[in-house]
Amino acid sequence: AQSVAQPEDQVNVAEGNPLTVKCTYSVSGNPYLFWYVQYPNRGLQFLLKYITGDNLVKGSYGFEAEFNKSQTSFHLKKPSALVSDSALYFCAVRDDGGGFKTIFGAGTRLFVKA
Amino acid sequence: GAGVSQSPSNKVTEKGKDVELRCDPISGHTALYWYRQSLGQGLEFLIYFQGNSAPDKSGLPSDRFSAERTGGSVSTLTIQRTQQEDSAVYLCASSLDGRWENIQYFGAGTRLSVL
Image (cartoon, rainbow over all chains, first blue to last red; front, side, top):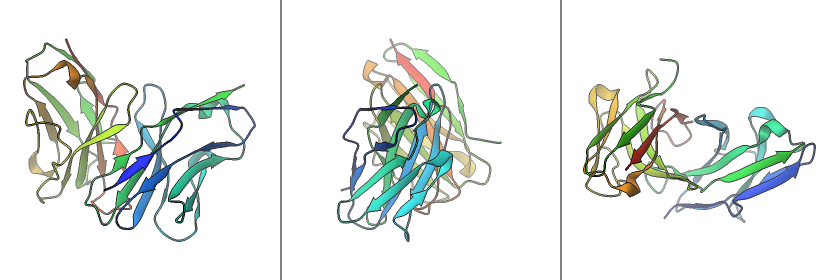
């Protein structure tokens, strides 16, 4: 069965410092991995995705994520955090061996302090 | 339309009443999803529609929940005999089609409060 784990409820980082939001997954087929962000009082927005190819994926707003097949991880990263990055981040997976549903993690709240 | 539209934005109802939540996907998108986001929780998959195919209803939590998609466009999520535990934000998303790599575009959600 598909599953996604985001082990941290909250990540705190100082502005200008690098940030990492962790995500691990479990699938039966090939994974299609996504990161979405939810700003306060707004809907979810797509950040980036991994389908195939390079393990380092670059997305919106300077974010990137690294796909690691052996560790079944897809951690979200940014070299220099901004206060405006403070939001709720969701990792999601689709599995070509597990039907058409998308499984989302519980979310990680990122708080960037000025 | 420009984006996924959901109505109403807020719904307050009494326990035991039925409610209908509406989702209008992006024009031309054949795939439509419903999710539930409870306070402090992630998104829980409810149901998936793709074109004229039979929907994937595997996420519906009970037989009080049902959804329809008429004409391949607008979708309605119905909750019968609402319970307090149904209180949550119900999110709708659409994508161009059902391919696994497609991005989902989300509406702003309907916040349901069951008193």
